[in-house]
Image 1 (cartoon, rainbow, N blue to C red):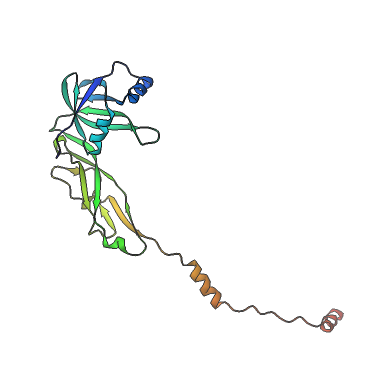
Image 2: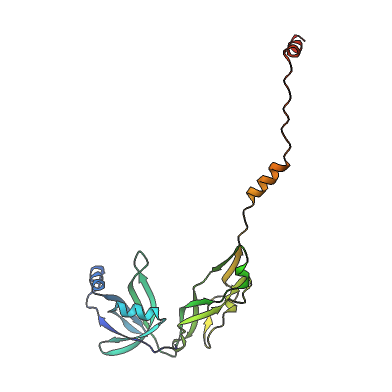
Length: 217
C-alpha cells in the first residue's frame, strides 16, 4: 500500500438485528462485523462517511480501534442497498501486514488505441476490477492499464502488475476488446435491386371478337 493505513473508531454493538441496524444507519453509523485469526466475531459500527471516504481513496486495509485496541483489518465484503447506491453493511477480517490475501483492485485504463479511432470501432472494457493475490502491505490502490498499443484484444497478461502482485485470472482472459459495427446497407441494396429490375410487361387485352371466337370453339 502506498498510502498510510487509515484508522476508524469502531463501537461494539450490544444489540443486533435489522431494526437496530436501521437506527444506526439513520445516525450515520454503519453496522459491521470483524472476524478472523481464530478470534470470536465482534459486531461493531463505524462512521459511514469516514469508511466510504477511505474506500473511494482506494483503501483496502484499515486499523479498527475497538475498545482502545487497534486491529489491522481487510475490507472483505460490502453489502449494498436494493438500489445499489449505498453501503448498508461491511465485513472486516483481521490480518497481518505480511500475510497474503486475495482482493479486487480497481483497473484504471489510459490511452486511446489507434484501432479504436477507426470508423465503426467500439472499445469495450470487460473488467473494471482485477482479482489479485499479494501481501497486505503491498495491496495497490489501483492498477493502471495502458491501452495505447492495443490492437483488438487486451488480456490479463498485458497488464503490468506492481512487484509482489499476481493476478488470479488466467493470463489469456480478455479485459478489453475492440469490435466493429458494420453500416447497414439494406437501403443501398434495395436501390441497386430497383435499378436492375426488369419493367413489368402488361399484355394488351384481346378484343371481344377474339374472346367470342375462343368461347365458341
